[in-house]
Length: 251
Image 1 (cartoon, helix red, strand yellow):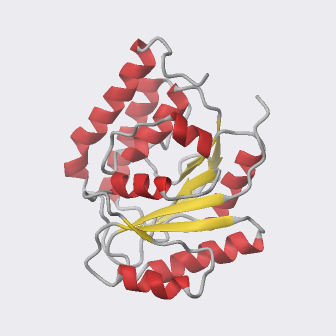
Image 2: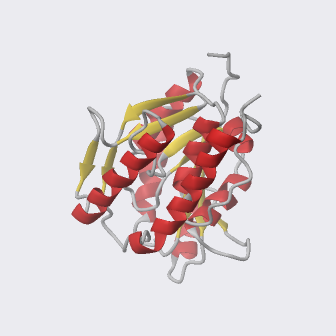
């Protein structure tokens, strides 16, 4: 493994749409955990066109948590992927972790990511479906679809990762910049990012993580709306893997 430069700032990018109830505990958990671990960080929460008090709540929380840096997606179009890209473009960290606003991701797992990146890895990927991983209150239908989708991705790309579709992953800034431009405007960005990173030759480590279902609000992912979009992104990156002759690989 090549020697990677030391990291100085860990950015948490959180897309948020109508998450006024979830954000207070989510931000508190991240801030408390990272501060206890002495991780230099910023928390970039992207309000993606919310219709509730999400933006007002973020302004209130900003007065309490000095590392919180809320921003509103002003790109002209909304969507999970667009909100993440907006957050990436408005972040300062040389390492970035994507987390959900609904507290489904554990800040202690993000700490593990930070340590893996500091050991020299380009990417830190979690899996809920390896020894030590855990899922709590996962809807049965979504779990079934998740396992089928991840199996197909793993076989199609011949990779060891069995939880590609989970957004909760961390990257060095150099990986984010090396995987641009991003095409996915919706939840399919969750597969575009890691698959591009792997296909383009960036190193990664996989660690067990936990996931728990949200306590407030409703899930934004609609399976019936995302099938063709996931397929499009996977096909696009698959073509790059097998037919681009390495033109986009890390130099």
